[in-house]
Image (cartoon, rainbow, N blue to C red):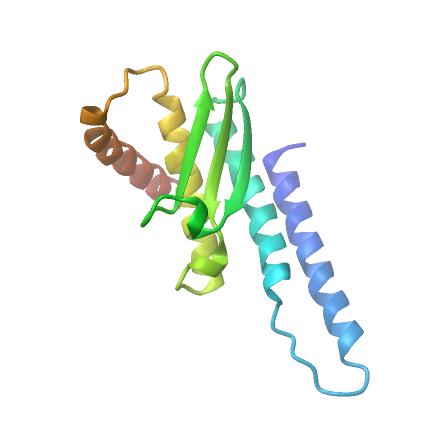
Length: 156
């Protein structure tokens, strides 16, 4: 399925969900149409997987088996928005991105930030074949952040 087809399916399912929710609760009394935390979590998870699919293809990382999880702040290092762990021999990786509940941003801004985090972690994966050490950590993080910023600007 192409990236555009996945995006279209995602939008259609989300709109269907919104319509169904409004029809179910508004038959007699005023109701709260603001999404529940669990509903936002589902949207965040679908969006995150869609962005992983798109960027994995763009960065030619199709030969990697990458899974993605939405994680609470307690599962990540302090002051981080995500991380990646990989096995270069098996070409497998797990990306974790921060749960929307741990952000202090509007939900649409959270989704934009999640995409940036996905791209950032995929660039780390792209550099997986390079030697890593504690001394190279900070310079690598700066380079990955600059490349991510450039890619995101090019996309828009």
